[in-house]
Image (cartoon, rainbow, N blue to C red; front, side, top):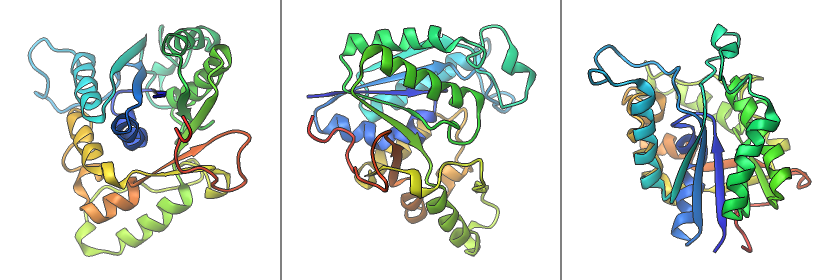
Length: 262
């Protein structure tokens, strides 16, 4: 049995990018640990969504635990930093924001968990955080440094296959049943080209769990969102493979299982 630690910026990030590998690892008998940098305080919800006196971060913590149970995570930890908001917003510089936290300080916190767990594999994000969000970029910086400090042997940077998604979005946009569905527009700030990706994990057997975990994050992922509104076939195209970069591997995709041999 090996231990997978998967590190994310906000509640709900885990199921979108790594929900499949989490459930796969769990079903194969490995230990899965979810670490989240912030409680997602800057998210938005419709008026009346929260209970009287309830704070958004409280709902999002509960949603994260529910999603973690679906995906098979045996431990969930929050590092306690504050959601920095989107790039360029004043909240980036707010006291306690993850974006302003010294990388070394946060990395020490994460490294302590990696050591406690004797982690074999850590996932973080690519150098641009997938799409340029400050907290996602910080997850990359903190994750890579924490792995150095803890001596974690395998580090995979979760990313989006820009070429794959652009092709799929073009096809979907031409189908009348997707008129009105809010679909992402892949651009140069979105994911990475396939040429730099070194690992592709087929997670189609776990898409039911992945979608249920997304639904658990109801405060942020509505039934009308791209994630839940699309039918099973395009959902499988968009989320049935999870993509990673492992330094020192490649060129090209050379791995299909992050825990192979462990």
